[in-house]
Amino acid sequence: DRGQIRRADSRLDDMALDFVTGEGSCIGEPRIRPGVVLEIRGIGRRLSGLYYVVGVTHSLATRKGYVTSFTVRRSAA
Image (tube, one colour):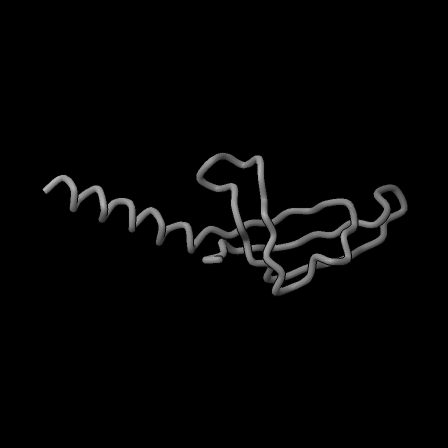
């Protein structure tokens, strides 16, 4: 029945988001560290949301200053 198919499709879409990963960087932010949950916005309705930080590098560069680079995976939170 169409209702069951829609529910199954919706569940599959939700499960697929658990496999979304990404990388980003921002002006230096010492509060970003592994284990923190970030809200990432501006990447579309489906992908914007909560992400779990799995890795971080804080660096200082002559021209860029203090930069935080991070890797994330979609959070169930």
